[in-house]
Image (cartoon, rainbow, N blue to C red; front, side):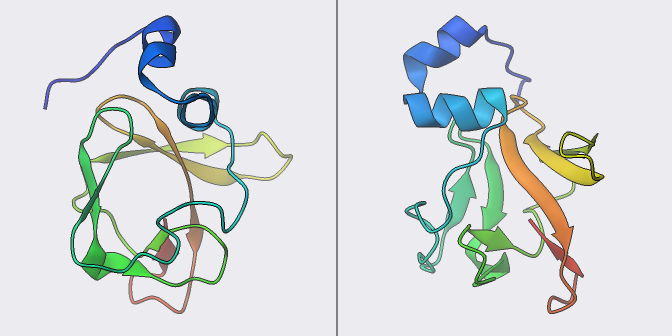
Length: 118
């Protein structure tokens, strides 16, 4: 996929206000509000902005956190990890490598064989 570079005005025309806030402004949706929290059918999960494949259902699990959770991405090239110190703690933000959409954060999770929760 070719790297996507759009202006915020272009993204605002394509995304809902909530999608724009989360993906372009780094917002967080309310826990348990995402339609994919309890969705476990076979398939591929894509970036809401550019439709890049990010995760597969085989890697999805119920983390009981209120957000869709995966133990690994579809491959190592689809995500960009960025150090995030915004809350006074060090976290790792994940973005879509194709369009720079904010996807959330990756956390340690010893319950998973990968030791990570995306």
